[in-house]
Structure formats: C-alpha cells, structure tokens
Length: 321
Ligand SMILES: [Zn+2]
Image 1 (cartoon, rainbow, N blue to C red):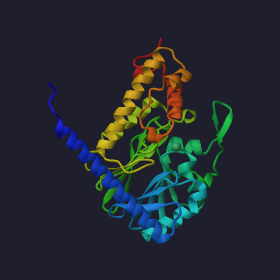
Image 2: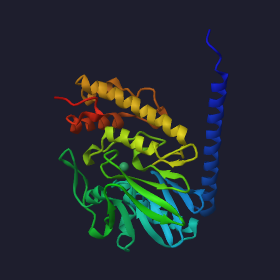
Image 3: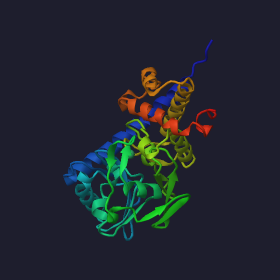
Image 4: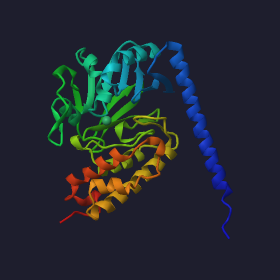
C-alpha cells in the first residue's frame, strides 16, 4: 500500500500560498505606486535599500539608487523612454542617471540609448551587444531586423569574458556574460550583498524564453545560462526575471528543470533527423505553462539554433560525423 504523503502535500500548499501572498503584496505595492503618481505604464517596488524593480509593458528593469545617481539595468522601448525616465526620477527622488546597463541588444531594452547616449551617460554592455547595435542585422540574410544606431547611442563601456564590477553603496553590482543564450551578447546583473539577481533575457516568468537565432542565440547556451544563474542563487535570493513576477529559488529550479527536459526531447527529435515543422507538430511543450501562450517560437527558434552547433556535440548528445 502507498504511504500517505500528506507532509509533501501540506508543504506544497504552504509554498503555493506563500507565493500567492508574495505576488499579491507586489501587486498592491504596484497599484499604490501607480495610483499615487498617475503613471500609466510603470510600477515600482522596493527589493531592498535603494534597490527597486520597475515593471513595465514589456518587462522588468532593475534600478539601483547610488549616492551619486541611478544605475539602470536595462531600458525600455524607445516610445516609453521619456515616461520611464520621468517615472524613475520621481519615484526615487534622484535626478541624475549615472549608468545604464544593457542585458542584450533588442529594442525592448535599448530604447533609452537615444536619450542617454547623446548626454554622455555611461552605457555598459557585452562587447557583442555593442557590435550588434552598431551594425545592420538581417534575418536569414534577408529581412532587416535592425539598422545601426548612431555612434553616440552605442554602449561606451564594454566587457567580454569575466565580469565587470560596479561599486554600489558599500555593496557591489556584478555584470557578467551568459554566452550564446537569448543572443550572443547576454548579460546578467547581480547585487552581491543585497542578494538580488537580475537574470536578463534568459529567464522570463510569464512567457517562453525564445532564442534569437539571427544574433546567435542558442538553446544549448540557454541551458548553460540556467546552470550559471542557478549557481548564483540560494533560498534567500530575490530573482528578477526579464518579465513577469519575481521568482525565488524554487520557482527558478522548477523552470530550469522544465527547460532541461524540453531540451532533451528536442535533441531526441534532432537525432531522429526531424525538421522544425515536425518539432512543432510533435510539440513537446504541449500542456506545459498554458498561461505563457503559444510555445511555437520557442520550439522553432530553439530547434533551428541546433544547426550551427552540430559538429561541436557537447549540447546535442555527441557530434554528427
Ligand atoms: Zn530580447
């Protein structure tokens, strides 16, 4: 006879309950912030001392109020830029923007560059992100996805391997590289003492993590990114995903396990010589996370991203001859 696992069930219910409470609390904070200042598109909540998450129409940004100005981790689409800058200045009471950190090149996070770049404000990014922003990007050699930004809007401080450290009120913000995951210029930001991790585009809590094959995103690299980020967190870490509600370690581990399982299934389909259409047809993501919407782009782009990595077989269960 099977033993009753009431303890596990109770623990699970408690966990879900605490999670719901936490999200409700965050929502309350957001609506208070929104109604108090008439902001239409943005809401702010504190993560620690002088440290905030700002939630907007396309995702989350991290705001650190240093003694001599704000450090913004990720921007917003260009048409929200003025509203966003006004909002964070008013909410934090700090006028000076000191630094903007970019997690990757996509327009959803680089729309502040047009305003902050020409003012000579420090813009930090991975070197590949600076290169993508400064060039014409085409999808499969045809459709133009991006035209070069003017020089004065490009990141003016870059890093490649290793990490870049920013001092922050006796604490330290670490910016690091996640090779070839969402793009090939992904960065995370981590405030060490406060134990806050901004994941960048590898992790979303409300939608599928789609890789951008046009700029060398790779599902195998996404698995590496989940491993790297997973090694930086513990039960107390506040995890700020690119979009959706804040996460804790349990949320993160659950999501990482799901992606690992999906990746394994997609590798099996690849090794059976299936094509992207057949992967969509088989839909290994069926029934998972219906609230995230259609997984088609995740599956299609993720599967196509294997093609550039067939010889170096580490991510695909051995190389093809
Ligand atoms: Zn993106």
